[in-house]
Image 1: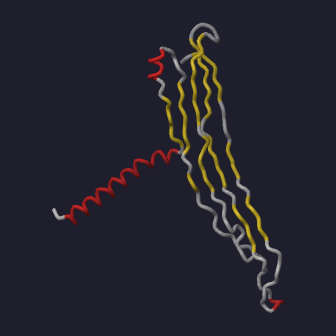
Image 2: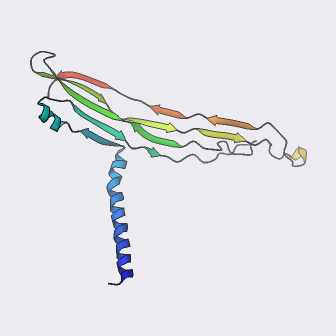
Length: 172
């Protein structure tokens, strides 16, 4: 086999491996949150006690597309000079189940705290600027007039609805 053929073959294999890796990564990104269990089985056996069951969820942030420029009458520059970038993601989730022996009577009871992953929608700060000139007017021979410049910062926003659940009951 010639060296050019081997190089082409290696490039094709590398491209296929990269495509397969990208396909394997998409289900986690499509899920919105990646579950993360905390394995404590080895510590339970080494210590000889029942430890809490701990798991969590880590959200995958997804950047959105900013709105395009909006031109309004009476302004030379668009309404949002530097548009706000939306980012959707989530707050991390946590699930803890801990044994509580003989709290509510005989047997083993459990205390559970569940904080599910919550959706989080944010907008980055933006900038609105207008030029110190007006639009050309017919009454001034088509020349723009001078005016005070305008500048403003578009405030960032954060929207979410977190939740919390506490359960105290018998072992299932």
